[in-house]
Length: 286
Image (cartoon, rainbow, N blue to C red; front, side, top):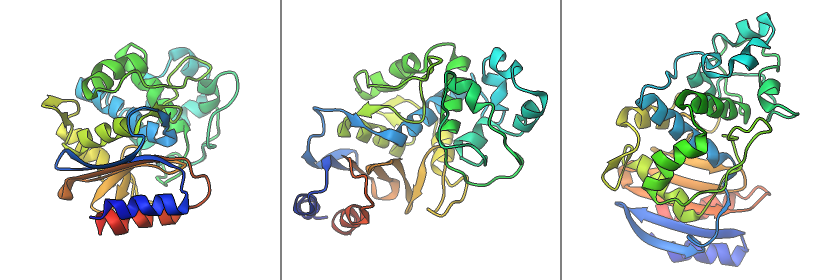
């Protein structure tokens, strides 16, 4: 492993990387840049936090991922749906949404009520399982979990995840209806995201405390739906023999349990930049 060579590539190419960390065997081996002082948007890496919330809620018996999403949404929103739309939603479980295996959603919900908009989009064949990436599934799952645990998702996550991991009141985003967005809008430090990766690498344990059940972590990090990137779990991406937490502008946490490695970096690079990942793989993974 040559972490300094990775840092040299970042600096030579002027890639807009805020900070990076490498852990092995649970210990911090290397770090670069700002990893603890400033929070940065993590975009779709927020979806993994929503997955963790769903897993904790299932572990506690609040939800069943195999049940229809409509069973957990506000009754007033469900009753406002036309009969045909409600029937179309019957095969859509929380698990289907968490694996992005429902086709037909636009990328995000808009308007005065994101919940009403999300439930109004016509979905042609909800029995068919096909990978179709959108922010709406994570948003709906977040609403469902908040309803199931009977508190705001921020409050639930604060008690059950953030505080045990030493993450201090992360910035979050809300929809016009007041629900946690679930798909994006969270800001964390590099170190914060690493702690989430470490907890998942250790099968749901962190500093001797059980956060998630082993069975949920195993399912969430396994390939549940194939796609061109190699597979998708519960708002997590398959990566080599492990998995990754991904945000859209190169926000990454790679977790390789067999090697005991967690590699995290937060950046803001809007253009395609495969060289950053290639440099990480060359110099850190060898």
